[in-house]
Amino acid sequence: MSNKKRKIIVAITGASGSIYAKLLLDTLTKFDHLEIGVLLSDNAKIVWKTELENQDYQDYPYPFYTKNDFNAPFASGSAKYDTMVVIPCSMGTLGRIAHGISNDLLTRAADVILKERRKLILVARETPYSLIHINNMKLVTEAGGIICPATPSFYSQPKTIEEVAKTVVDRVLDLMKIENKTFRWGD
Image (tube, rainbow, N blue to C red; front, side, top):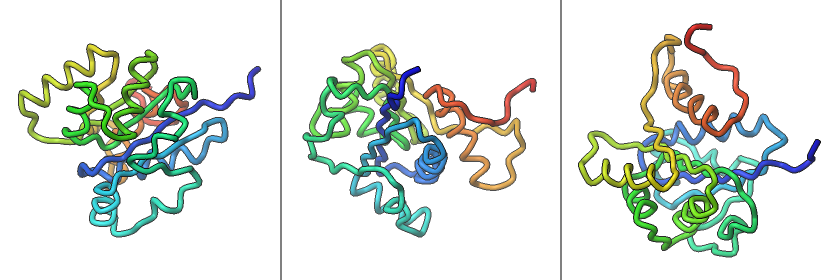
């Protein structure tokens, strides 16, 4: 059995939905078989503080990388990061990824994940979608990425905002192939 850790990139943009990123990072801290690198945009810091009324993103035990840090390991396919999640994913970020515009570390990392045929999950956070958004989602999907809209489910009868948001994060964890005890339809 291999001792190698799975390498995962978590990127957080300035789209509304910081709670999704927080809940994902909270869950990932429970696993010691994961190596996590985090990208947090300047706008994401502002939105996090506005929505969650704290700056707790500073408390996670992961290396954080800046927008233009092209020396980050996942700027190259040789570092073998196998999964990237952009949560929440702004439509601007999605559009740049869809069109291969690698003008910062986040879009470069997404480009690397796609070119290496690894798993890219974009937790799109916008409503309503314009035709431009939909076409960009189509391009990302055709390139091998997964669009996972930040659309909660209610089967589990969530009672709090966190429980509602967790339904989205649970789907992301499933897509990442990370074992997660959650409500399952039919169980």
